Length: 460
Image (cartoon, rainbow, N blue to C red; front, side, top):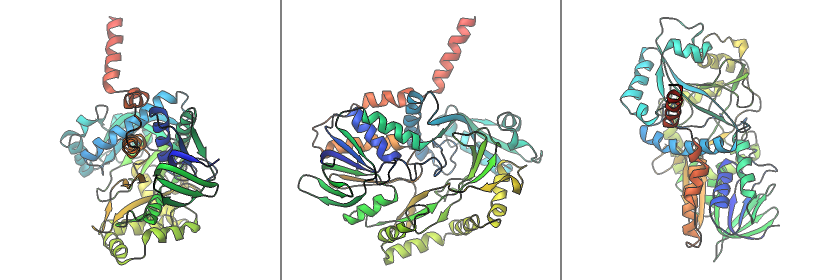
């Protein structure tokens, strides 16, 4: 039953679950509760049909700077190491080739520069440039039917982790639940958070929780709750709904196209589904929606709470949407949801990856896609690329658009350090054990080279 805890985590998606795992397994915090408003964990954006199933390293995401890629890389390796150590049966993930494809002289030159001059080849030792013949060996349908005179180059790596973030969420919670004094409440919606002398009181549909510290990891709703407590007044959200198109058995792994650097949204890519490799998904599209959850009109009011209907918010939206790159992109994406017209408009994006695809080969995926909260800074009247964290007095609010799922464990590690400061240093974080259980299992290029050398020496 609800009661008193040292730490309460609000939100049962991948972000909240990774923090629960980290604090329950690797700190000596006495009592922890996780609260999720839905009847099941990971049923909104972490559900495997509601995201692109990508573990972002920054190697093939061409809108990432080298600095951002370096930061994301560590986070991805933490999660990849967890999957390697806890998912030998591949129930949470599949490991496949992935590449970013350059088509034509201009894009090929851009990839060559990225790999050789901008430092991505050095940062990612397993990433390598491959040309038409080798692309055809790995992904035959990427080359079949393509003009032989068109230049092709791909940056390819075997570290293509396709992840069911819902199953991963449940794994984190299962690991945490093995520890004493860890409670998980589903079907429990937070209705109010009130600061107290000693921490916070959370009123919920199942009763009252009192705690010393709180972390809100509730996606779009995190900013809504932050504003109710007077935090994040300079931020609003630009909710973007992603959708996908499906085809049968076209790709073996993940194939990205080049990304426009001004856009925080993922480039169109094709990849085999994490649980059924015979299904190829193409997307995501990116449509602006006035809701905080996909398909739930009831969250329109929540969006208006976050938006605030103030002059700064309207000016910020106007400034962002008037951009000569972003506005045409937004308008084009509106077309993709239209019956028949949508398929025809989206087909060229699919054909850039698989040239032989016809209109009848693709269909819009019903029930796929979630909402990603792009963050708007109303002071700068601009989009903030990536995640947002608001740290208050004994409370943290996490708003996690892509690559938030990929970096969930790195975010959890940072939050754990902050929480120990909130709790006056009464507890300790065994970061060495945390790293051993996660990134310590990540297979590195040097490990493979060493193993190859040992085999060769034995053969000699």
